Amino acid sequence: MSFRCGTVALFGRPNAGKSTLINQILGSKLAITSHKPQTTRDRIAGIYNGADVQAIFVDTPGYHEAWTELNKAMVARTRAALRDADVVLWMVDGAEYARKGEKDPERDLLDAFDEGMVELLSAQRSPVILVVNKVDLVPRQLMLPVIDALSQRLQLAAVVPLSALTGDNVDALIGEVSAALPEHPPLFPTDQWTELTERFLVAEIIREKIVHLTAQEIPYATAVEVEKFDESEREDPDKPIVRIFARITVERGSQKGIVIGKGGEMLKRIGQHARKDIEKLVGCKVYLELFVGVEKDWTRSKKGLRKVGFE
Ligand SMILES: Nc1nc2c(ncn2[C@@H]2O[C@H](COP(=O)(O)OP(=O)(O)OP(=O)(O)O)[C@@H](O)[C@H]2O)c(=O)[nH]1
Ligand SMILES: [Mg+2]
Image 1: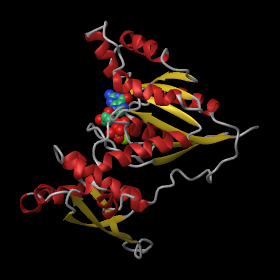
Image 2 (image 1 turned 90 degrees about the vertical axis):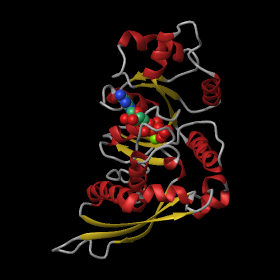
Image 3 (image 1 turned 180 degrees about the horizontal axis):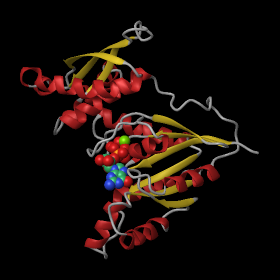
């Protein structure tokens, strides 16, 4: 029997549900998610291992208009992931288009920014699969015209409506992806589910808690780096523990005050929420210490990005 293997890039606007889908496919939490746009900043790869297929799903930052140096770097990562992909998933928030279509049936479903995305996808050599997400939110008869309109815009290998959140029809997507991948032996050991390090995943978990617990510009101005990941007592037969020291960087002094909170209350909550998830990830008790620092306007310059570890 032939084996199929390759990379599958998830491409779409912020908030389409790309990270939710990757977690659903892997059956474990790899990519952080939130209802706020621009949650994902990096290329996040998760490996799906089937009987005769290995699909390396690559989550990407939502495609958006880039103003700051951070945004430019995010969009550059998305474009690079597209270039490298054997299959591209064009993921859209179907519910949003359905509501738009219901409100004003005369109006074009796609705006100028969407058209730019279609253009980018048309130039793609690898097959594109349209994934219409969030079918759980609107009735089927509202979704059908959306699927119809979007499928006419582009040469597609397949169209799959699904719900990344509930998992509805995700198996159909796996089938279409498998069929579209090239014949190739596995690129990773078949028991591996990610190429990311625990260190990176820990930093992302902490960042997710900050995105969830803070408001306005804070999520966009925050970077997290793990400075120390001490595993020396991880295999301790009596009290296994991992000790983690992480640095949170914001852009301004006022933001530092918000992240720390009155009497350190906010930082404590961030730490408590993060520790629970990190313990699940590493499988033992975790000691977590967080520091908050300021790197003035780090999102606005290449030098700033480098300083917070965002190469
Ligand atoms: N109801 C419903 N909500 C969903 C579905 N998929 C994702 N969501 C929600 O949509 C929001 C955005 O999901 P994410 O997975 O973070 O979206 P993303 O495309 O990775 O966003 P960026 O990283 O900002 O580009 C979250 O609040 C999810 O819970 C779905 O199928 N149904
Ligand atoms: Mg995401």
